[in-house]
Length: 382
Ligand SMILES: NC(=O)c1ccc[n+]([C@@H]2O[C@H](COP(=O)([O-])OP(=O)(O)OC[C@H]3O[C@@H](n4cnc5c(N)ncnc54)[C@H](O)[C@@H]3O)[C@@H](O)[C@H]2O)c1
Image (cartoon, rainbow, N blue to C red; front, side, top):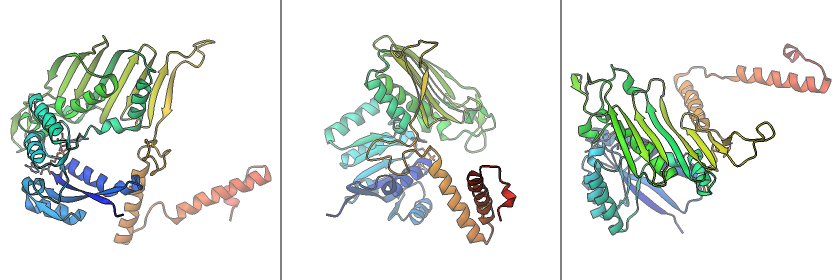
């Protein structure tokens, strides 16, 4: 029996449209035994030139600047929303009316009222809808959720969660749409805070009450049109939070934390144990089991660094190998690309056969040394 192909209409093709397309196009490598396949059937961007270029580059059939063409197409099953935040709600409503499944980038909408209408309508329609809070699917956070579910932390007493970027720490950085409340709908709280709040609620459950404080570090900076622009959206946001069972915590979302790059980090402290994770250290989950004996001299008490690396739940974690650390596959992409570029330009590639021979010579000297039981000069291997 042939596999059903789920056809996707991609709305927006900036950083996330491209990311989702990469995922769809490469899904069979990571999940070879799925009994369905998926393809991007059409792309909608703001200009026909860009939509056509994207279709040519990625082998997509329909190019359009009218999202209704994809939303109302009987050949499309899923609408993938990768447009700026203020556009999400209207698109979602139309896609639900057309009976489509929806995969929507975060934040879902720009008000709770909109989000609630969207969630209610999605339930009524019986379609499948998802928000791209992909951090949940980082292996260490999936493992953290399991440990909390097994009661290994006990009642949660405290948590500290941050999502730090450094991009707005530079006063010379131009404001993009994510720094403009009129397009983003909010500031960094929407852009990064939505991710870290999902991480907190995923691990710690509902938040009962919050106290917030916003920060604009630079009241003016260059705008998208190159002219001075009045900053209208928070560049950092600080929160105190209370959990229903008395746990308390802090959440910070910020783009003014110099030196942080892309750091979503969370610490959760419970009666029986604690957890720590950072996106900048994505191979590991740190787990402290407060029930292990601390004698003699500390026993084996202390944070365990759990090797999550590429261990994904079945049916994933087959390719790349479960032991492949984050970044392993990416280095292969760069290696092959540099080789192909060298062939294309008629240039040398590095590492070349000379580099291969250097390593070969050392290995041969090592084998020889093991056999002889003494040091062997690498230069003596000829
Ligand atoms: N999950 C994540 O890791 C992550 C990361 C970045 C952004 N996002 C979210 O993804 C969404 C898109 O962000 P991005 O970084 O890709 O933005 P982007 O600016 O890189 O791309 C936005 C795209 O939308 C297109 N667009 C704008 N108006 C449109 C319209 N009316 N119809 C169709 N296309 C239109 C633009 O041409 C562009 O191609 C946002 O909601 C953002 O919050 C999520």
